Length: 335
Ligand SMILES: NC(=O)c1ccc[n+]([C@@H]2O[C@H](COP(=O)([O-])OP(=O)(O)OC[C@H]3O[C@@H](n4cnc5c(N)ncnc54)[C@H](OP(=O)(O)O)[C@@H]3O)[C@@H](O)[C@H]2O)c1
Image (cartoon, rainbow, N blue to C red; front, side, top):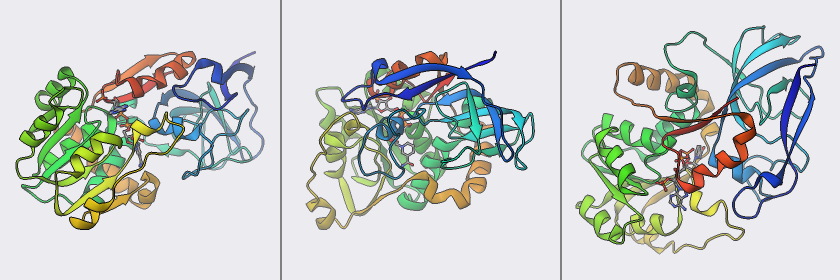
C-alpha cells in the first residue's frame, strides 16, 4: 500500500510552532472519484502565513480547523485524474497541504490548484520563490501600491527573505535607490553584494537607528513593510510627505497572542498612503506578472535564492526558520 503522510493540526500554537501541535498520520493514498484528481506533492512552500492560518483570528481565509490537514502551498504532479481540468503528468501549483498526496476537487476545497507550464528553464523552488507567488507579491505590492519613481528611496524589511529580496531587485530595475533591513552583518552583505541593494541596515545592531538615518539621507518614499513592530515605526519616522507604504506583512507579530498598537499620527501629518494587500487581490494579473519575473530571471537581472529543507516530516520545525531568520530567500521543503 502506498502511504499518504499528513500533518493535521491538533491544537492551536501559542508562540513558536511545536511538533506536538500536529498529528503526523498515515493513511492510504485516496482514489479520485469522478471530478477529482490526485497530485503527488513534490515541494512544499513554507510561508509566514502558515502561522497565521493556525491562529483562530479574523483573517483573509478561514483558519485551519483542528483536525484538518495543515494548509500550505506547494508544487506537485498529477498521478491520477478523473477531473477534466487535469491529466496525468501535469505539474500543478496551489494549496496542496502538508502531505505527500493531495486529493484535488475534494469537498471544501478553497482554490483549485493551477496547471503550470512544464519544461521551463527555471527550477521548481524558484517557481515557488522569485518567479512564483512570493515574486508576484513583491512585484504587485511594489509596482501597484508602492509606485516607486526613478531616484526615489525604497526601504524594504525582511529584505534577505523571499519577498524582500525580490522587492529590492525590482525596485532597482525601476531605477530607485534601495535600502534593505535585515538581521545580522552576513545578510546585510548579501543584500549589497549579491542582490545589488544600494545599502543595507542591520536591525539587530545597537546603532540600527543611526544606520537607517545614514542609509536614507533623503528620507523614505516607499516603505515595503514585511515586519511591523519597532522596525516599522523606525522607518515610518523617516517617511517623506506623500510617501507610500504597501503593507505586505507583519511577521514580528504572528507568534504573539495579543495585537500590537501603533501611533497613526505620522500617517496623517505626512499624508502617507498605507495600503494592506493580499497577493490574491492581483490574481487577474498573475500571468502578466509571472512572465515579467521569468524574463528578468532568465536575463540574469532577478536573482533567486532558496533554502531547501529535506523531508516532509521536518515541516513544523522548518517553519520556525522564518521566525528565527535562518532562511535566506524562499524557504521550501522537498518532499
Ligand atoms: N500580503 C501577501 O499576500 C503576502 C504574501 C507573501 C508574504 N507576505 C508577508 O511577507 C513577509 C515576508 O514573507 P516571506 O515569505 O518572504 O518570508 P521571509 O522574508 O523569507 O522570511 C521571514 C524573515 O523575516 C525576518 N523576521 C522574522 N521575525 C522577525 C522579527 N521579529 N523582526 C524582524 N525580522 C524578522 C527574518 O529575517 P531576518 O534574519 O532579517 O530577521 C526571516 O528570514 C511576511 O510578513 C509575510 O507574511 C505577505
